[in-house]
Amino acid sequence: MSKGENTDLSDMERKELDDEISLAEGAEDHPDDLERNNNNNDTEDENFTIESNEFIFIEEEQDEFDMDVDWDAFNEALKQQVEEELAASDKDKKKTDRMKTLRKRVLKIAGASFGILFLFVLLLVGTKGGRRVLYRIAGSYIHGNVDLDDSMGGDTPVINPIDNNGVEERDSAMDSWTNEDQDSQGATPEKPVIIPRQEDYVSNFLIFGIEEIDGAKNTDAIMLASINTKDDTIKLTSLLRDTLVEIPGHQPDKLNSVYARGGTDLLVETVEQNYRIKIEGYASINFNSFEAVVNLLGGVPIELGEEEAKYLNRTNYISNPAYRNVVPGSNLLNGNQALGYCRIRRVPTIGGANDDYGRTQRQRKVISAIFNRYKNKNLIELFTITSKCLGYVRTNVTKEQIEGMLEDIIENKITKLDTCRIPANGMFDDPSIYMGVKSPLVLQWDDNIKELHQFIFLDEEESDAEDNVN
Image (cartoon, rainbow, N blue to C red):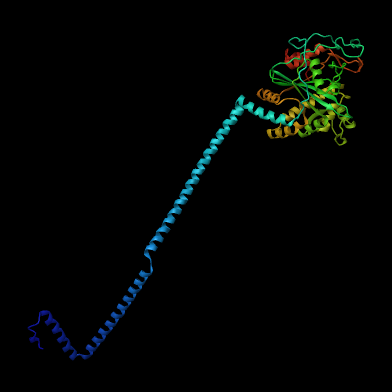
């Protein structure tokens, strides 16, 4: 078909036909180019086939991967993991918040507890009513640890009241007591019972040490301890053991013999009747207990004269020979040494006092040293020492009396200790024998009772009794 014959064809068809004709004509003129074009076309077709196959493979792989993955499960796992991470973070935050809240609560509770404790302590210490609670607690503790004596009897019936000062007129030198006063059977005639004096501002307690050597039970030291809230002092009065006294139900004898005759009851009654002082309770201690108390305090500081030191080192007043090494001047005496010092009567004191006067002066000196040593301890030491000392003391003092003593001493800030001795200087005689008793002290009772009551009850100015205060 020639180009002219293409009249019935459309323009598109004619164009395609012309291109084929031109291509055929060109192939005839250049056969090599045609073959090269064919080869190129084959290569392109092959490359296209390979690329098409690869694409098909990749698509097949992607389809296979898509078919293997459970996207819903994957998304759910991912969601769960995210939620767990968020929950853990929220848990940590809540834990931190709880710790902060707990810390705040603890601080609030601690602050409130401290405040309550502070108010409680303030109430106890800062108010008298509160301190009474402490006194009751301390009183119960002390009362529960001492050696209690419930054997004392009741009050003695009394007649013949005396005047306001507790003194009634009676003759010196044991009144009218003579050998003629005894009846034919040797019994002592009945004497009026005297009301001993007592005042609201004074509490009097009898303190005595018992000498238990070779079965004897004499009271080697006898003292009155008085708590006076009028002048805020503790007053310690030595009653000389050789004083000739009236003994209810017995013949007159020395004061230190009374305990062996009738025990504590008779001793208390004898002191009340002769010295006209109401005794509210007593405390006793023996030699061994005295030594233990001094040792618990770490000893007591005492100044010795040259004669005293030599005497203690060469005699058995210091019972343990290893401790017979005291020196003139300042000494820190242990219990065994202090006991020996308290019992000396054959050599004068530093001040020149002899016999029983010197001995009672030494006793008061040691008691004062114990008092000062005790009050200078800190609270922990006081508690420890007191706990141990209480078991050495035998007493009939009640829990309520102990509470009252604590209140009197603490509320009135009593730290001063005054000492005195009866008989007073120049108010007694000391015959070699009197009414069958060897070497007694025969007191001028009216003068001595007046002196004693001035000292304890402050009946007159303190200067009136100064000459007798040691």
